[in-house]
Amino acid sequence: MAKPPKPPIPELLTLHGRVLLAIHRSADPITYKEYGKLLDVHPRSVQRVADDMIAAGWLTAERKSRCIAFTINDEAETLDGGTIGSWLR
Image (tube, rainbow, N blue to C red; front, side):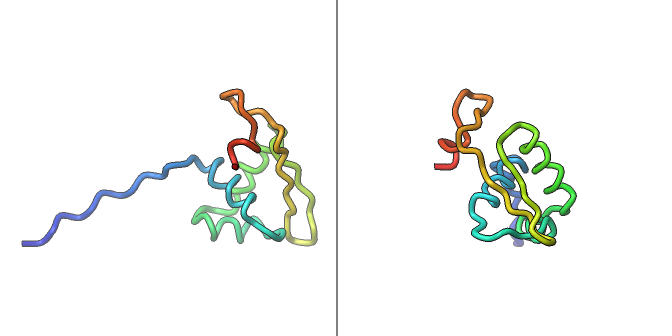
């Protein structure tokens, strides 16, 4: 008798959290397309999420040719009163 298919595994983090972690782990500037491939989402989704985090003061971005160099503001406050830096540790 065949085993029933496994249900899909839900994402533990929101796309915002996944993008933030990808930026945190990226040693060099990369393109939105590369972030999209890394996260298995459309590059425009990555750009939209990054724009949200820039507007919130969590990130700054500097274009370097086609790539984007992000800087994470460790002191930026999260909704729970913590900081981005403490969340990433």
